Length: 427
Image (cartoon, rainbow, N blue to C red; front, side, top):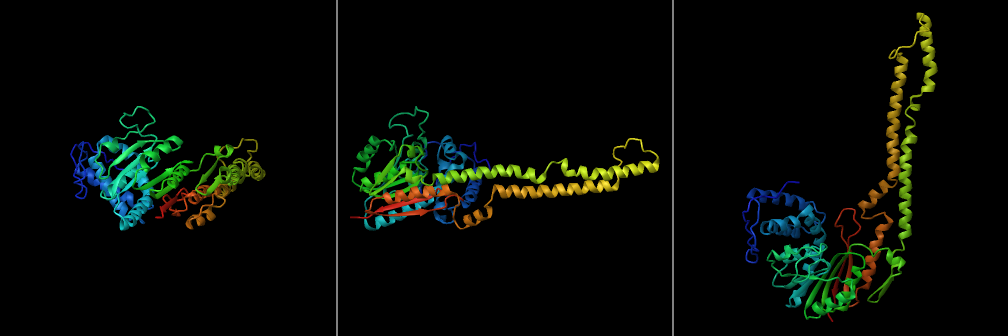
């Protein structure tokens, strides 16, 4: 990847669209050549995103936003944002969410003029909120609240190493105001505080929960069900509750739906059986090439060739009168050379055959998997566990809302891509 980190302190100019809304607190960096090179690279990289074709207009807008961040944010902040190109991975996963939020806002403002507050649960670094602040209309959104247990407490400096910096939130004048709140929704007391301090206020709320781990997805559904002013929910579970939930016999009641950890992990034994079979296949694969190739010394057919070779050499020694003279190294007959050449060919053929056997043992259903991948299926038994969990969450959403469960291939061959979109039906 090209090095896009410049050393100049020149300030790049913002685009005309956002110029009135943004002020620069510290000069940006990078020469004009660096900026142009970065734009060309970013254009190429974003075109390769799996969701780029379906959401091309959003990708184009995101490119301008990322270039603007690079131009206006302090260098240290920008380097942290762009570390390992994670912004591109996050953008790809957020595109379906941003599209559905836009759709909800269009429907809402077609019938109402009340401004909307967005709550980003377990926001992490806050990329989704940052993109929404730039992409949405500031006249329609009152504020965006980022909820995460790793944010520093309000008015206090970051002291704990487990807390994350919020410099990227405070060093930039966002078109839509961003607020951070340190809150752990796993704790019942803090979940009640969230309801009392945010959702108890009159207004229209949109709640986003992307990449919620384990039981946090259940907490998000509970919050949505218990607060009627949350008009729209987006939920993308990241993973299942830990398997300790099975031994603890945990169970969840979401709305009118009830399920247990044992039911959720009903396919766990099938997954273990699959892993055991895979392990045995790898063991067979290691043995197969040895069996196919045989011992390199034995493969030279020494026992079969040596009697003929000895007879030929004995006849030659008797004819020349040198029967007792030791045979000199390198003095081989044409017949012996031919035998060695044939042996080399046989070993090469055996090696090729062994590689095919090993590949077949390692991937016994390679062709079948390829066909299933092309048809959007996944043959791994464990790939359906997250789908089952997402189905339980979907059923747990309150009945006074229209809820859909959708699958988006945000990553190639990735089964962790279930999205739940719920819109509360007006009463």
